[in-house]
Image 1 (cartoon, rainbow, N blue to C red):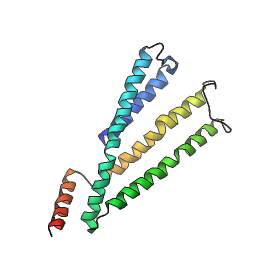
Image 2: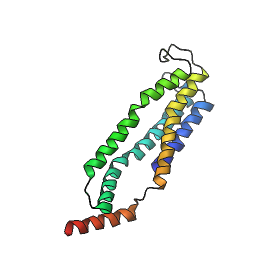
Image 3: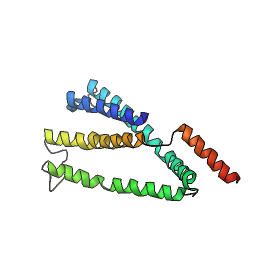
Image 4: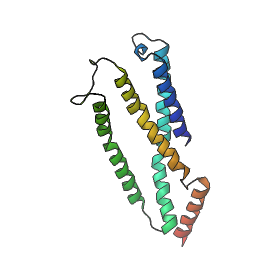
Length: 168
């Protein structure tokens, strides 16, 4: 939850920097305030995403243990497969979402490239795809975590119960 909040806050700062600053001044050939600020905020933002993402894999094990606690069934393979399936399903929509996004701003037959004139439509679609879509995911994650029953105390209870099952 803290990593997700850090992601939301740092990407909001990145959005503010790009909206209120001058993104055309970001250059490694002429390093100035915008370049340094962009690199610094971007590092914080990507670091936050990495921190929150690092907890996903251990949570799969916690969910498998919780299922054993609830039903007595040992299902880590099913939990890992279910996670992998959902992850691949959601990820497979990425290209489609980008294609529909750029088509909605007039690029129906090709993707924009560096030769296209910068305009507000390209900028805002880029911000939506680069920052807005992940924000929607992080908000969904925070909502899901609000109802996530496994905290430190519950996992200690789960582990004690599983140990009793093993001993029996």
